[in-house]
Length: 167
Image 1 (cartoon, rainbow, N blue to C red):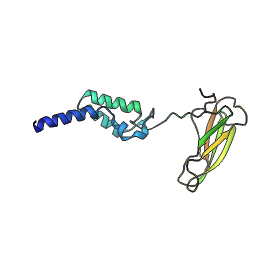
Image 2: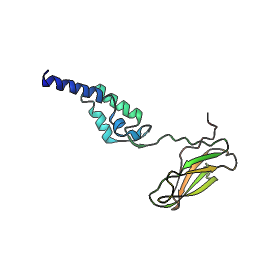
Image 3: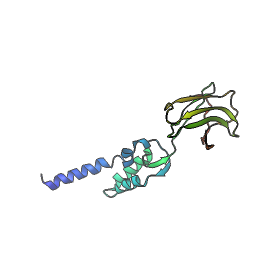
């Protein structure tokens, strides 16, 4: 066999195998499952470069990265919070670099506080600690999770907590 023939087989194999999986799928496995967000330009360029050897490898790379979420630099993951039948929800305490206090609250759409708990976060506090919030009475209407730091910054989960029993 000639050196040219071996190179042609190696290039063909590389193009066939390399185009089967998108670049973002391989390079960023932590992004799998993201459904939308800002597109990572570097991953998009790498996928588009697969169009040079042929349409099929490029299209396959783009489809794999868009469908797996590997192309998104950031985005929203689907988070489903569900109240148990007795009105409890368990949350993992966020980890912060600086010590502080965080208040976790369950609130209604009109910001009425149904349950709250203040937790210490940061160095010296247990990482990954779970906190349980419990509603005193059944909620009328949607219930949201709200987080407030000791500096007064607050954020509310965009979607309501599912109050229906698990299927």
